[in-house]
Length: 75
Image (cartoon, rainbow, N blue to C red; front, side):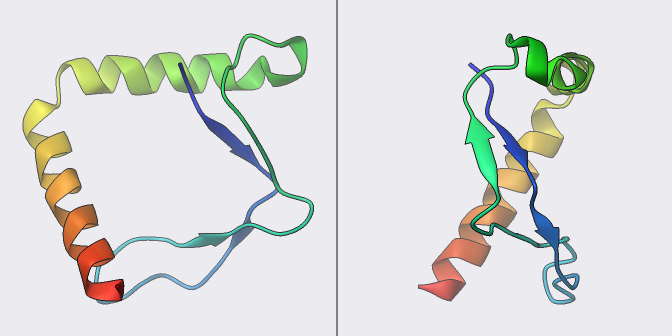
């Protein structure tokens, strides 16, 4: 299952963690699948992400650690 987001607002880059931040608004939406006709543009992006994931186990683990550190620091 895939999760997609639409109508997010790009915020300033988090300089400490070197990541871009986006903010959801009342116009933001999310969905749990790219199979619908309205979301066809996400199918290629999702396929690219899936392909990247298959060959990027180490990078994913590093990202998980970074996200966990960020989340732990904000609590």
